[in-house]
Image (cartoon, rainbow over all chains, first blue to last red; front, side, top):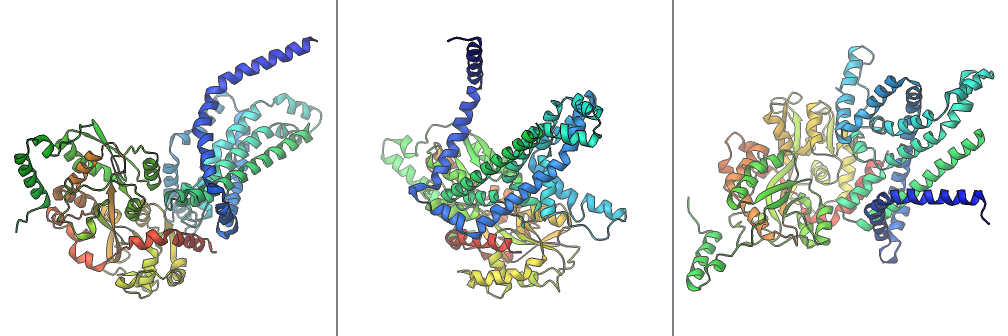
Length: 285
Length: 355
């Protein structure tokens, strides 16, 4: 039975195959230089069929509490980024062509500098005798320098600065696809602007919010040089412990077990974010 | 000066004899394998590599006509991976001080060929079969001279712990190595009775100083920066970093009392293709005139006893190996740390996380 519908479906499948062919080089590259080494690494963690490394990771309170701290820090960074990024993305999506170009340029400018350099720049800005504290003191706003560095505040400031663009860009992209006429229509039907935003524009931008949150959250979990330098040694993230095991103690099986745990937790949270935002979208529809 | 016959001299002599006895002069001279167009030397990078370029690299290139390509950073994990996959990209690599013996124990290094690398005049500690000791450095106390003028700085770790007599923010490394020793010294353990370290006692003593440590530093550049920015007035750190500041007239000086001496190591990764030229490179590194260039610029003096004679007189007191400074310090027990490092680190991380 060949109906027009079936032949259309066939054409659709053929197009899909063609697209897949174009994506093959990238997929192969990822498979060879990423997926394969990751699998090899993970297999190290169960060397000899023993789960002792996982046992140590799970039973030793140290690793559990550091993992918990890392998740909390990643969540805090994601939340701060979201609050700061949404207005920027919204403004960019509604700004004129020149405004958007300038805004995006300013947003992407920091990408041209390495994370390490930017982290050192924060040391200069946030220190006891740094630019920020000196200015506040000169203006008579504070008497003693604020503790902005070598603590959690410093870590959050540094990480948010590095990760902000990863939140702005997906939300901006999502907002661009939202037809401004929709919120105008809502207002025309009597909704005040805030309600038009909350009920129409915001739900439609949730794909971007979820992509941005997932990106920032996952990237946060992998940070170690920024927290090491700006945290004054008091902030420990799981990636720092993994790096220590790899580089200092050469205990690669244990490092692999910690990585596997981190990967699983990350995937679980990634799935959760997707589910929550999908749920939000369905409700809006 | 008495001229002693060096092993190299002797070998050269015997080489000549053998050459005369056998009709194989080329082989007797130790026929060098064909010259590659380059060798790769991996080291810490930064200021160090630029001095290497001017001293050891330049000399090696001049002597052998082989280009030296430098890479960084020093990475023990990478060394192990390279040797184990059978394809070391490095001809010679620096090895973090504590890792030299571990690299040897894990069979990651080629033996050093005494027929090429002459260390006969070096002190016993610097004549390991596989590990080449390139220099000595110290974790010592850096201080701001405006906070502690006229020699009023803490001398020794008991005084560093005395926050009433020596007030001000402090910094120590975020790592158990050195700090456990410093804590025990502060608690009254004499320098020659440190090992094996009493960890319980060390951590108890560290509890006392903890509230006064503003920053637990991670990278070697940090303590110097913290002193310059006046974030702290006292910081433990690698003496070369403070030396650099003193030479640039920053108000920072080094106190060597109870400093922790360590050696910088180099080695030839096992299985590297140009191992012979790696040996030749290490021989260049024994040259006291070149070691002195390095010592003068960075204060990390090599262990050729002749080296100090090539260093300008005003620099000598700033070197950790200057006779007066050497006696005030202790040698870190690498063996203890190789054995107990992982355990100490775990305990350290746990201790850092206590709130």
